[in-house]
Image (cartoon, rainbow, N blue to C red; front, top):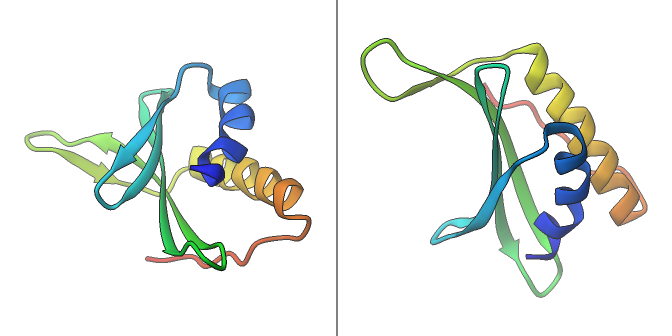
Length: 100
């Protein structure tokens, strides 16, 4: 995916090892940093016009089950890295929306 290809160099420079690939819902870039799981999930809305969404999240392993998403300073840093990489690639800043 061209969006993940645009993001991977910046994310690898900051976090080192990252996992990336394709799922049935889109593309993912995942890494672990300071005990947190960092996720960039990329969904293509319209490939003909190049419209996509990137969902950023940080999570920590729950006490009993699965993972629990949390807002952290690491999430803010991830957002800044992704925003800078996308701005450089697109030539203009992307629209950013915070989702609770």
